[in-house]
Amino acid sequence: QVQLVESGGGLVQAGGSLRLSCTASGSIFSINTMAWYRQAPGKQRELVAFITTFRTTNYAESVKGRFTISRDNASNRVYLQMNSLKPEDTAVYYCNKWKAQTYDYWGQGTQVTVSS
Image 1 (cartoon, rainbow, N blue to C red):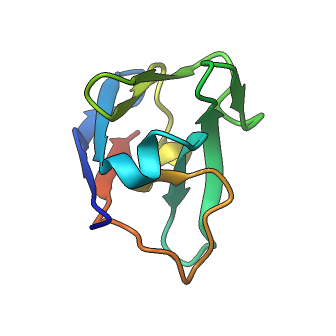
Image 2 (cartoon, rainbow, N blue to C red):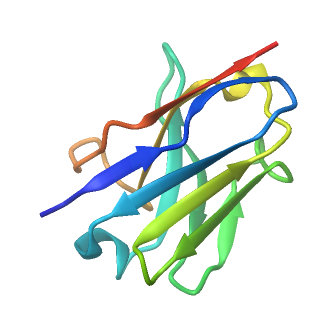
Image 3 (cartoon, one colour):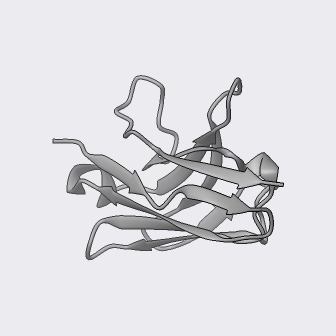
C-alpha cells in the first residue's frame, strides 16, 4: 500500500528555519529517487529538490543554498531542511518520487507559511 506522510510545516518569520519530514512506504522509497515539491495558492506544483538512492541531490534555483534535502534509507524517510525562509516559500509541501505525476498517489502535504 502506498503511503506518504509529510510533517513539520508551520508558521515562521522570514529568515527562520523549518525541517520537514516525510515517511514513505517501502514500495515508493526503496527504488526511487525521492523529491520534495510545493504548491503555492493559485500556482502549479513545482519541484523543489530531489535526492537519489545514492544521495546525489539537485535543487531548484530559487532554493539553492538555503534548502537541504536528505534521506534515511533505514527508516524510509526524506527530510527537507529549510533555512533563510522567504515569504515566497509559502506553500503546501509534498514529498513523492521524482517525476511524480498528477495521477500518482500524493499525501496530504504540510503547510509552510512564512510571514514578512
